[in-house]
Image (cartoon, rainbow, N blue to C red; front, side, top):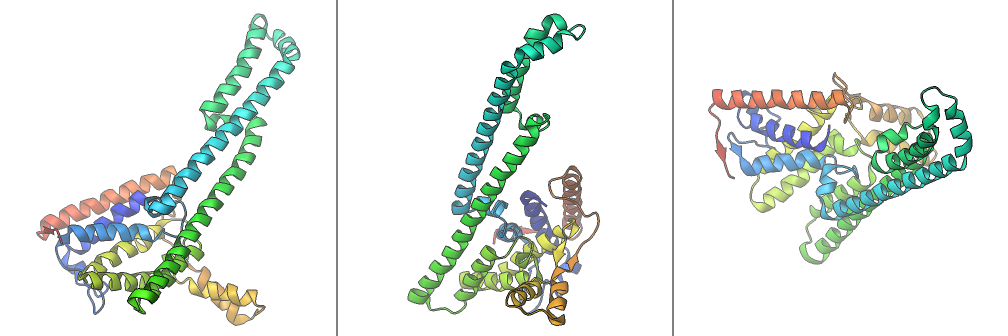
Length: 340
């Protein structure tokens, strides 16, 4: 699902948990470590919204990385350069195509002259056709991709540009989180000397090195992120926000991405350990079992594809259902709002 949908689902999920007594009283939302108070906190909604986006921090194209000043600026510049390069590529191909048409204009005009109703306009049609190919190349990429031969060439070269752009974005994201981890660790050594800070440093490294929909989308990610959030909120004196964060985080994984065709992993570290053992030359049944466990994913129908028409429709319907459930629950159980 896209970032905006995750934001809405996270906020509505928290609002429902903070409103419906039977859900609020579940052990997962109220236990020794996590507590979601009854009544909707506006700060809690913001926290749930943020945590619903953090799950995709391992993707260079995610909304959370667009919001990040460092990765966001880099992504925008890279995206603009990518668009410019593709425009220049279409312009170049358009000019080449125009030149070829003009170069072979005599032959083309002769062929068109034989066609009934077109013959007398053969010359105009030939030069107009060359002009149209040039204009389409500048103004409409989608149509240009469907032009025979030239569209195929453009798609191949365009994919190379897109791949280079994504690799650059990924590298920028990697350096941002790695450098942030190092700076935080150094600051902790020289000023705070708090061992809990190193968990956040490790978390930043995990964001940088793990592929999308692996560690951050697994149970391990939920646990480590919630512990880190708990540390921050306890320091700020708002312990209850840990529960808001937790609801927003799991809503992204188990109440949203679980409906996609990719699904979500139950555990991610077994596969990581298996790949590590295989790289150092260990190939046995234990490694095979770890790999199988790591590959197992949770999926629920309708197995949507993010960004597709069907996927977008499902997201809209799903959010509307959650919104209706919240409005009904709020009225039935006498819900309330507060700032903090």
